[in-house]
Length: 356
Image (tube, rainbow, N blue to C red; front, top):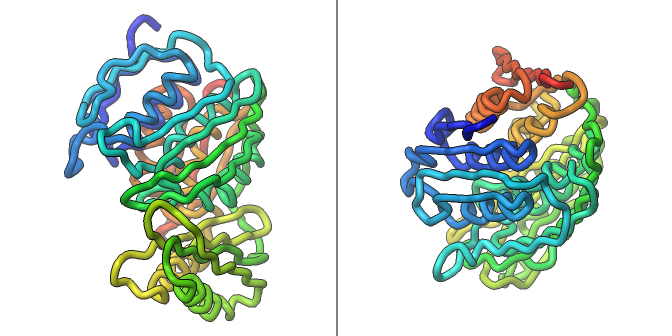
């Protein structure tokens, strides 16, 4: 392939998802890309600090030539020069913007994990920034939902939390150990049924705030979940961080899959309301009957596109993120994606890799 693949960053959902998936696929297959109209429809269009960190992280693992990795840029050229190299990497979102940033560490990790998981050797990745942020998977979701699901298809990785990072300061830190296996085939999945609910677990957390706040979140969530007839174990926890923050992070473990639901506190919002939001999300998924929660349905799509055979799974909802990911996977020629919505709002996704 002589020239870069041209990608319209304003297509579909039109957010950072296009950028991250493009970087993942470009690094993995050494396919140069040129992305234009990056986040063009957003209130603050172009690249933000966490996007620049994802670009530089992806570039570091494949020695990419990069043009356009500056704040506010709506155009990026990314050209890998070598196959993905396992190793020890450190990325700090705060370095991408003067004055620092609480950009999401989880989104940076999700950009580089698949290429490193299919590289020849072990990698240690440390990322500093926000660990429990809006519009991104919190650390608890990475550890308790995302990575266990990827483990089921053959990706071997663990993640640890060294420091909590909340908006607006961040300064949290996560560490990932990724056991790469070059030329290792990822396994397809059939996850149309989730089986019985086994338990709900999680933790209610407050940073630099009184102890009654996590306890009130725990008590309210426990009361709302008591009627499910399964064990409910929610830990109230006080932690130290660079700034105050609070949230509750719940994992519903079914026979075949784990699903995650969370809500974050904010000034003036009662602790009980935070718990109610997370429980409402859990119950909405449960009542819908699908196997995967809305976010996992999107985040598992790219790995399944390079699996050894066709996959299918049911999703709580076919989101704009998922539709955009499906379009981009097909632009790269990795797989054919089928999206079928039911009358109740859930969806069935089929993934047929072109080389599986």
